[in-house]
Image 1 (spheres, rainbow, N blue to C red):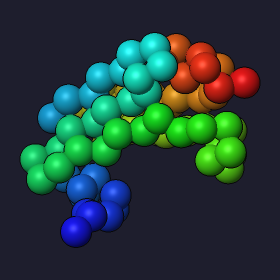
Image 2: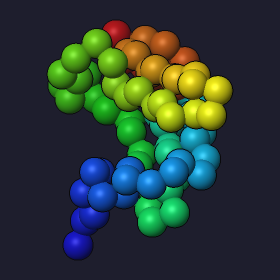
Image 3: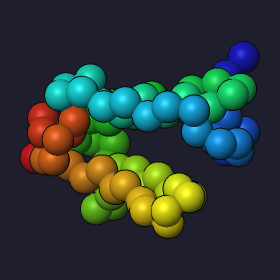
Length: 72
């Protein structure tokens, strides 16, 4: 049975890793979210946004950038 992203992502992220053409992998205490969308799956200008850091920083992933360079 698959776990919904909202359930998995409802805690503090333990790690976040990205790699060219491998996408984004965010691990939580109760599971992980792996994002590697195809062009057809894109529905907005951002693929993912991660916030809630102690220093109030945030990260944003967009098509054509870094781990998602394969998307145009």
